Length: 363
Image 1 (tube, rainbow, N blue to C red):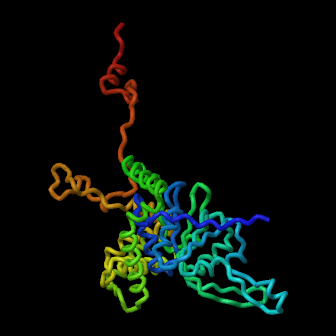
Image 2: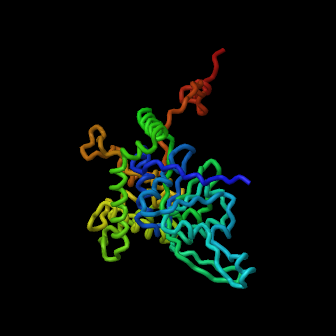
Image 3: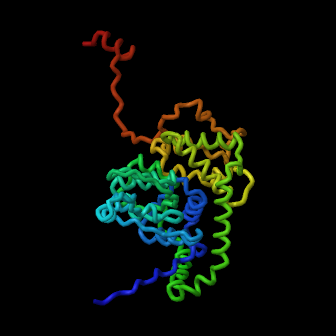
């Protein structure tokens, strides 16, 4: 019988060399700084570096495993179950860990997460948010640490997740095809250079990789310190205002936005959370939670362009008055074609016509 040797996994593309996706990079680094955010959902078409970025993120974490959940995985293989072999041989109940246990301390990557059964997604999101996997089945009750960075990807063309599951993802990034020719060429050149000489390419980015890794370790320490990175009432009010404007359900968006801003402040080595931190993480927090009616209302109530003033109006308002004075739902006048018609004969005869009709006719 012939045996095959296990092949080593190829070296991942360095995270420091990923270009063209700044929002994706930021979301992944924030989720790595605070895994309790609940993971990152990446929406986008094929070939937009989703898998490459997730695998590269694991390399920045010290001794971090990179675990992939296949589409055909069962609930038992994910959360773990009873070790039937030991139970039957030694008459003892022992827990056999699953993929959640293997992913502890690293990155759990799920491609096409929208195609998984809801039961598996529920278990994934529960463990990603709490950092603990609880299994109660087959007559045993077991719990173990499962602190990992959850990265899920999906192509909207193949369906989406239910709103209840979308809301439980901490951050969401929507990727698009790159239309700038020079940017596309730079990305392709980098990938070809990596494929031609992986180790040489990685050596050229080793210094940047080391800096990212040390920054991530420092950010995790700051996030773990409950007394670090305070925020003011004004920052909290800004968070509440944005979540209300987005018409989100519940308070999870407020919590995630504050935690994301805290992770960003920790990543940048700030001493406090500011409004700028909140503004920079807001879209990733609200993208998958914002109600459609909130988007319509935001577009309808957008402030007018006051950069140019109307002719003859020193205050910059039109002669018809401000928007608050008129009917905001009125339609602007449109030209209507008019056909020329013949004038109608008067229905009431004039006084002269009446006198002519009343005068006697001459013989």
